[in-house]
Image (cartoon, rainbow, N blue to C red; front, side):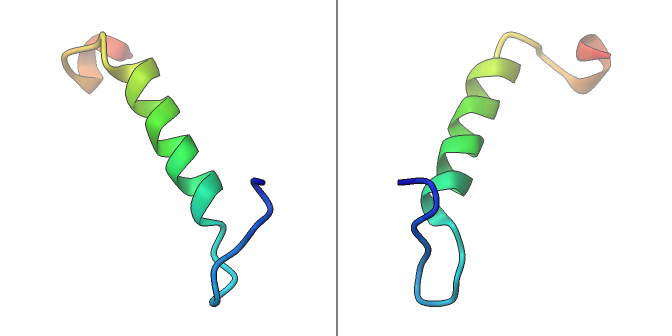
Length: 36
């Protein structure tokens, strides 16, 4: 599923899933300064 690529060999599913997981993980922090 994650290895499936588009016609230009871009792993769309993996990129979208990584983006969504990143949003969920970093959502509680109001800014980058608070996170670090």
